Amino acid sequence: MEENFVTFFRKHNLTKGYTDNEINQFVSLLQEITYKAGEIILKEGQKNDSFYFLYDGELLVMKYDDVSDNYYLINSMKTGAQFGEMSVITGESTSAMVKAKTDCIVLVLSHKNALSHEVNTKLLLACSRNVSKRLQLISEKQARLLAEEARREREKLTLEIQQRDQELTICSTELRNTKKHFTTLYLDQYEIDESRPFGDIIGTSPLMQNIFELIKSLSDTDTTVMITGESGTGKGMIAVAIHQMSKRSNEAFISVNCAALSDELLASELFGHKRGAFTGATEDRVGRFQMADGGSLFLDEIGDISPKQQAYLLRILETGEYERVGDSKTLRVDVRVIAATNRSLEQKVSEGTFREDLYYRLNVMNILAPPLRDRKEDIPLLSDHFRKHFNQQLNRKVERFSKEARRLLTNYKWPGNVRELRNTIERALLLCRETKLQKHHLPQEFSTSNDVGYTHKPKQIKKEITPDTKPVLDADTVNSALVASYWNVTQAAKSLNISRVHLHRLIKKYKLTRD
Image (cartoon, rainbow, N blue to C red; front, side, top):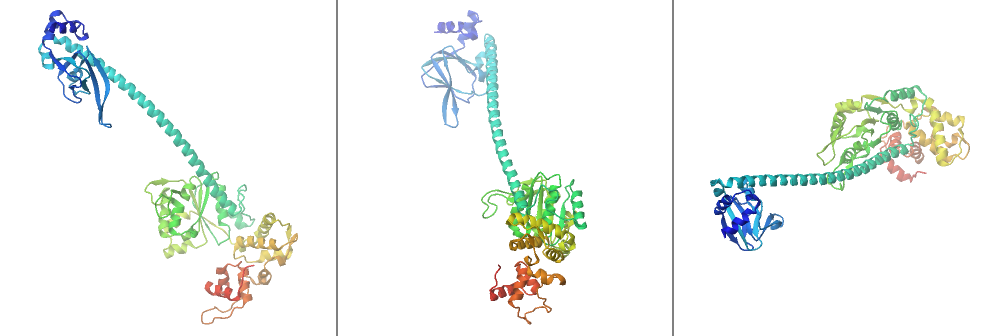
């Protein structure tokens, strides 16, 4: 049998350069082992110190798969193959299992025998060269695999980035459209013409010219502005004009009426909320600050917010940072804040109901919207503006006011300011079917009260009404107060010097209705 082994190794790649004597010595060191089909020759992960030569038969090389808990075939070997040298030279455990596919004969050279004879020096060198080549091939293969994997990952990442970019573009478009919608909604609500520098702010009086100059001076700054003044003086229009004249004019103008929302709803409205933050929060919500990012946010009735919301507002004014309701992630925005109030914030600060630090943050620049009674020279201009507007709205053809009507409009005290003037002109045009608006088209109270400094008191109550006195107010008196205040129950009750509850009882008693 040894003769056959000698013949075998004369043709083998590892021993081609051996002399006959060296091959004979080499064969004498080998151990012949016969394996039946299915027997395991080397286990995966075991330590190995021998060189194996497949003299006859066929072997399978297999690896274990953790997922399937089974072995899978990675290679096969036939007669003449050698194996085991990788683990001998590197000292590492076997990387795969070697199993007999058929009955086979394997010649084994132990590491100990290989080192104890000079004849095996050539073998070790040849094996080392083979191992180096195999390692190089493996490295190159791994490099190719890694490069291919990197390419696939790069393509996958590129695709994901493109998809995210598309999603971001869609979201950005939706956000821009939402911002535009809210801006348009506010402008439409107050019928503001954004093509004009100061919108629909009309006036030639010194007071209004001063406001126009202030607005211009703010055009190249991001200064926080506080607008104060009575109800109906046009604080919202001034806010829009500040935005339109600023470098943020192409961005959103977002408005929030702070008095119209509860504390919890105001927080969600201003800062947004995360899904599940509270009962009813079924989806994420973008807050008004985020909608106004890059533009302006108008906080109307700022004096009505709670101390808790004041603290949140102060932080975002100082740092530009905030968190949505129910979210711990900090967001940043770049927003110009314009606030407005018809209350005395100085008094609220002294009473301890409004933070002093927030007051100074908001009140960097203060603009006082003057009451209409202090700029009577603007009343004719405003009256003509509203006449033209409601001619179009109501399909009327009123060309001018009579002298008496204009005199009554100019001399009236206008406790409701520009808003009341607007409503009065609208009502008058509804009644007027002529080309000239006459005195009788105006509310009756204008004629009866104009010369006595009318202040919403159709019949002057000289004595304060108390539960003890309980004077009887006739139906005409109550009705006159309601008409004069355009059925504003609070104002009518105040003019009659009675409570709102008392006024409601009288309305019910006299069966008064709004025409």
